[in-house]
Length: 117
Image (cartoon, rainbow, N blue to C red):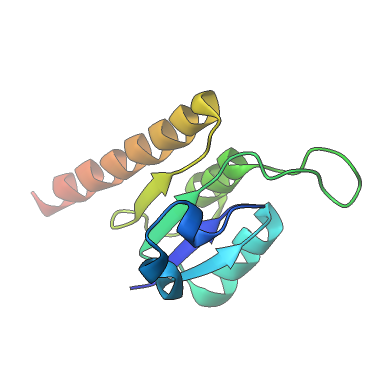
């Protein structure tokens, strides 16, 4: 099972049990997130932070919500079986990420069920 951890600062053991560290690949930026998925395919599980610090230009970097939006609107990937957690300390953004992914996955599953009927 492939697992991906998106966070600019935290380590796996700050969110999950230390024994789970080998299960995850870590990406620190939105760009690394997109590149990872384009190269390795969609992981089974993604753990999202939202606030990903400053970019190399000193401006606020694209965040976890931007990564979730990329998955939904641009990636073209089948997200029906994606499992995820939002571990961001930003409660507003965490709810936005959860809502976007949960609703989109529900939509895909209901569409798939309609096609089976």
